[in-house]
Image (cartoon, rainbow, N blue to C red):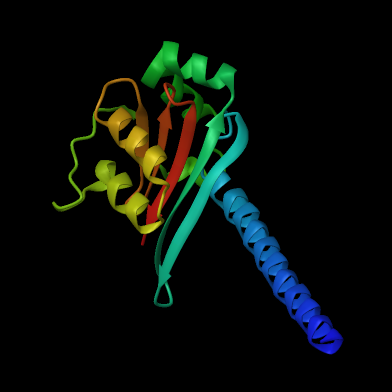
Length: 176
């Protein structure tokens, strides 16, 4: 009986160790993915923390993903009060060689997309968020905000940056 108990303890230890290593690798991947997605936000957008990062890869060069970040209170208030003019003015002055330089001018919502229809550039969020498995409550709040006035977006042919001051979030999403 003693030998059986020692074997069970070892097995439990091995299983717990494997789970811990898996969690550590998953957290490291989350941090790397968040840092990668963060570079696509304009430099003047101050971020407090990473909220969510996820992706899905299919094939060699195909994939989609979403990075969601908590806006600082100052950035959220500034964008809320000054809107598109503030975003476009700051984007032009900070465009240099940063990853955000290729994005379109900023526009204000509402979005009118349905994920069941053909998705166009400013409506891409709906398709990208579903592929990256954004948590349901967060995805629902974001979708609701994008159908109302007061949120902002800029896009390329394969990605989009969304800023939602009411939720205090900035989002980078891509689909290519």
